Amino acid sequence: MEVQVCVGSACHLKGSYEVVEKLKKLVGEDAVKISGSFCCGTCGDPRVSVKVNGELFHVAVAEVEEFYEKEIRSKL
Image (cartoon, rainbow, N blue to C red):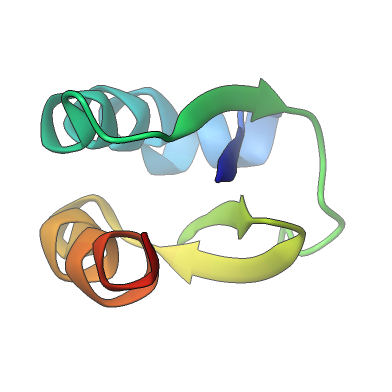
């Protein structure tokens, strides 16, 4: 599974690096590749843009654990 977190300037200001760090801790030994990407074109959303296997989501720092359980862990 591939997870891409936008690290463009807008998402950076929204906490993209915190999202990446939280996801890294949650993923642990799971078969998930986490990488950064640049602008997903949805800068108007107040949350960080995250793609999981190409599907776009928006995640606030406070929502990372719930997002991980619902969109990543449940699909491994």
